[in-house]
Each structure stands twice: as structure tokens, then as C-alpha cells.
Image 1 (tube, helix red, strand yellow):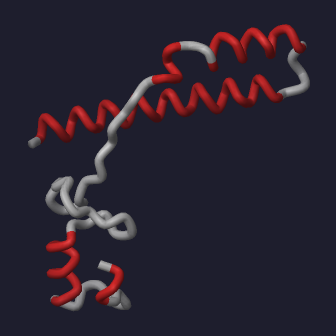
Image 2 (cartoon, one colour):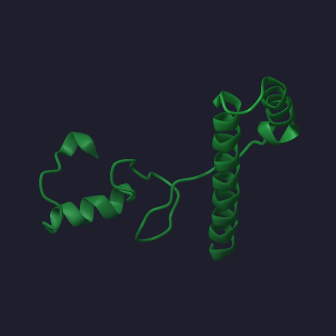
Amino acid sequence: MKCHYFKDIKKRCLLKRFEITKLVCLFLVFSKEISDVERYKIYINFFFSKKLNMNFELKNHCILTRNTKTVTRFSSLTRSNLKHLISWGLLNGVRKWSW
């Protein structure tokens, strides 16, 4: 299980670096301080490269158990852990329809 978790961390780091380079390239493409020829070169080199077509499958993990099944978005917990925390009174204001 730990092996899968570390693979997921590597994917997340790679995706984060890719998103940062994408934002920098977008900033350079839309900046007026660079000449039109340079902006066009940046646009062609980045947006028509094979890096842009990378496919990632990132899974949400439970904070407590690192389980990937039935993880809720708003709490990052599995349904069973969320149910136990609510029944013990550790989470207030959560209604039944939200989990």
C-alpha cells in the first residue's frame, strides 16, 4: 500500500511542476513586454508539445487510513471514518445527506 501512495506523491509533484510551467508560459504569451515573434515561439513550443498530452489519474486518499475507496470530497475521509467521527461527536454540523 505504501508503494502506491509514494507513486501517487510522485505523480502529484510532476503534475504540480507541469502546471507551474504552464502558468509561466501563459504569462509569457499574454505579456506585452515581449515581442510578438518571441511570444509566438513560446506558444508553439509549449502548447504543441507532447508534454501537454500527458494523462494522469490522481486518486483522493483518506487522511486517516490512506484508503482510496469512497472518499468524500468535502472532508477527505472515507464514509466509514466519517460515520464514526460523527457518531462520536467529533464533527459538528454534518447532516446525514452530506455523507
